Length: 296
Ligand code: NAD
View (cartoon, rainbow, N blue to C red):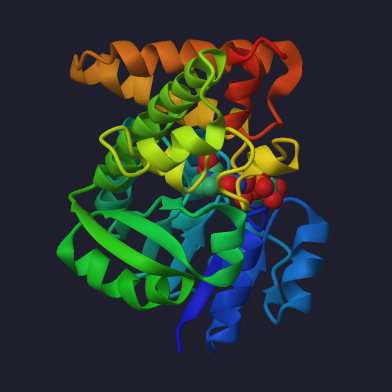
């Protein structure tokens, strides 16, 4: 049984926190929103009134926060984790943040005597609730082995991707590919339909041919062939356009730093950015199908 401080009990953190409690860990929960703490207490966690109170006895501090600035301020602010966590505590950040912020946080945490690992996730809110997330972990072997038992409770696939920040590298490279492949899938279905080939027949062919990809076989943006896909429920998210755009922007920034050419990743970012500006941020990212069809 581990003393865990869980900071950030939003869409993702609430389910992850509940799974740790269910597995028998002592979880002290903190969020800026009191109602999020109340929900965590209902799931069996102990409420903390302040960040400091949450981390004071923690062996592991888990953060699931919106962006890098939140993680850095929670870690290094005056009333933050570095100032008040006990010696030897492990920092486990599951938020999606920039590679640069993750590496900076790990170095600064290490300078203060703490191990930190970045462990961003894929699998969304349903994966967080069901404990079936995929974790991509960056950090030392020692940090990874200490984090692993908790990650195995919250997820089903846990990968050690290498040193600090490499979890974030895996996450943004994967999601950039997802953004590109989703747009490509939409273009292919739209082209086929315009030329007189219905979606189901094209799906039956392409899903067993060389155009096959996850965006098609698990999440088909054309309504019909994959009944569980958001395309069959009005493109309700799922994985919202705003979240995809966040990851594509992180990929673009990282690519600039690394001087890696990402012409299609950049173009995908522009397409999602226009959808967001036009008021569609909350739709599922596969709703790019509606734009390509000229419907929105
Ligand atoms: P969310 O906005 O629902 O939750 C974030 C929580 O952090 C909120 O409850 C907020 O009040 C809290 N918070 C913000 N600043 C805080 C602070 N200083 N101290 C304490 N609490 C603070 O976001 P989410 O959807 O749960 O996503 C969390 C992270 O997971 C993000 O980095 C996101 O990119 C990533 N992610 C989300 C999904 C998804 O499907 N929602 C999927 C994969 C990864």
